[in-house]
Image (tube, rainbow, N blue to C red):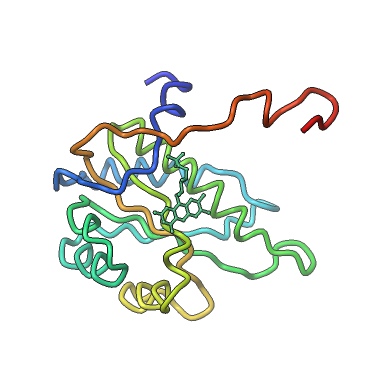
Length: 174
Ligand SMILES: Cc1cc2nc3c(=O)[nH]c(=O)nc-3n(C[C@H](O)[C@H](O)[C@H](O)COP(=O)(O)O)c2cc1C
């Protein structure tokens, strides 16, 4: 797919998925896109647990309360390490976001679909429950969860404001 087409094809998709499995090679290629992302001081604070075991996928669906996840072929769990990278500064959120967007674009490029699940992990200890399920060690955090599946319906990106409302040359003009 052409680069701009991939950017436009990415959209948050919350099911239904077909249940199609994804090969480990394809999952590795998708996650390699995340590994290639920039990170503050190249500290590479983001790591990934790729869940393709059906039972674990169903358990993540149950923990999050999101049924559509059980139809996903896999779930990519983005793990962060908040250890400072520069003085007392940690860029873990930015690092994870950069990796996640690369992964979402790779997912869209393969005709798969996903959604950036983040906010929902912060209530009721969901992130901690997923961390325990996947043996994520203490000191590392489950930051983002990305179900990956073949979409049963067209993927649409939510509408964005036009360029003129969000970007200007040389001077802020909003
Ligand atoms: C930091 C962040 C947190 C998000 N958290 C959630 C979430 O918890 N649940 C969810 O369904 N979508 C979540 N999303 C997806 C957004 O709702 C979605 O990106 C936004 O509505 C724009 O739609 P689009 O992805 O189709 O462009 C999150 C996205 C980001 C970037």
